[in-house]
View 1 (spheres, rainbow, N blue to C red):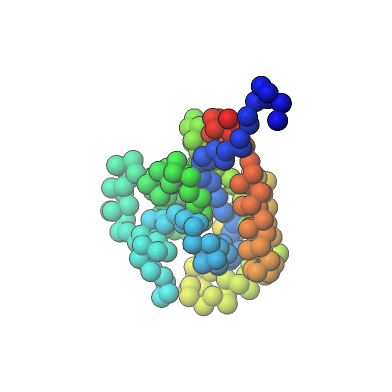
View 2: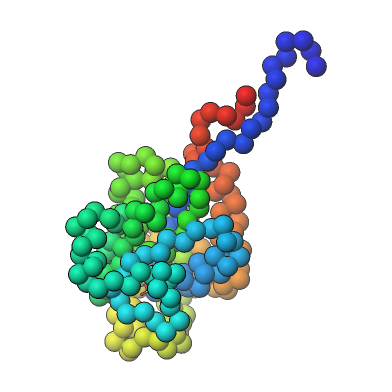
Length: 218
Ligand code: 5GP
């Protein structure tokens, strides 16, 4: 090496985590895709939402949701504990700040399965809050067709006919929102969709926007 040539070490700088916001109509397969990703990648955190609906048979308190009464939910709104919250299909759902902010600061990636209203609220907050602007990525998971969405909702057999109809009705307006998202993934085959998500997350790790300024070349 020539004398005086600067020593340039490549140091991997610390990076902020990614808040992967996944929306799409009920029946698009968000929970299945998120659960498979969680199993394959234990390092990926999941934002456990609060919900006022009743748990389904297979759901576990604190893993799938924090199931709250309407009063408990209202109290959390008063205490300003939510990053976002919305009424979805007649129940209240909300993301706690504690599920997201400290984790992304610590470099952890988090999956959020939330509806389009919640995603919109986070998008709005990120205009004022630079941490959110850096960390959030918005992914719309769509069904291959409306007919397939209906078939999936009916095959779930855990919801009442009334609940299915409400979800189908809501799906019509939710589907119009795909353009508000950064990425669109069509869930035709769940294994393929999980692979698409893995590739996307890999690519997002290469983004410079979450890297800290110092420490890259020293
Ligand atoms: P499900 O009752 O089928 O688990 O969820 C119904 C809808 O609520 C889904 O579209 C899901 O993405 C949405 N959801 C779940 N958690 C949250 C949340 O914390 N906030 C918002 N806004 N929507 C949520």
